[in-house]
Length: 170
Image (tube, rainbow, N blue to C red; front, side, top):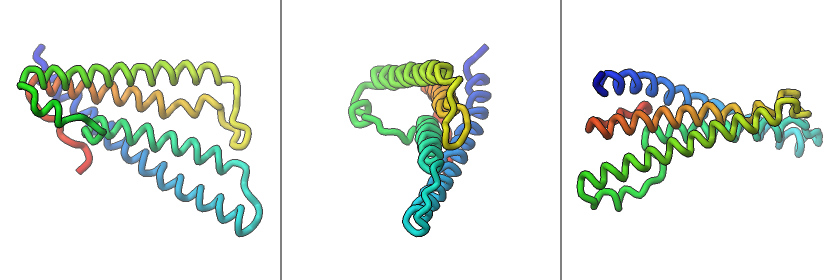
């Protein structure tokens, strides 16, 4: 089996996943704005601070950060040292780009396994002010880790075949 059909299927899947990651991140960001404004108004205008605002805001911050980071990996909008790689000879630059993607996969794997370990260690606890399982905090980390690994695999295949990964968000 050649790499091209695999890359085409993975690119189609990843384009959908990256768009949904951005939709989730944007929705969570809007929710974060709403819950923080609500909390501030309730505290300073009505002197009646709801106890759940801080915990909901923390869940939303985690979700925004993780899903936006995953989408950034897919669309290569994350911080990079391209100026150094750009002056290297073609094969060395290619090797550097592949090494970066492999390291990104290792980081994503650490996110997934660390998130699963933390979630399983907290499975019996609940977040008291909102009544949901404490392990729920780690779901965005786990899902984003899987997305980041898939996106990096796509980049490796694209680099190997000399193709570009089309951005999912224009």
